[in-house]
Length: 105
Image (cartoon, rainbow, N blue to C red; front, side):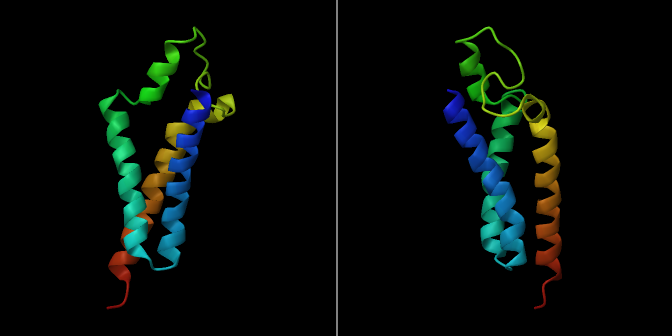
């Protein structure tokens, strides 16, 4: 379960990091696609009380409840994951929007 959860986490972090890359390359279509992909994950988290559904599954198999009991991340990163990457996601999405709106016609 930890491997699966970590792999999915890496995927979404890569999506967030791809947004500014494609924005710099003026590939606003691809940047917007990654915004949408991460947006779907945000909806899933919101619908699940800001908890990843995989955390609930992993909790059935252990009594450990450290912030990183279900994922291969340092405890400090697991604890602050949503805050760090949530802020980053908002910032890169706003930068994308600004660049798209300010692009020459």
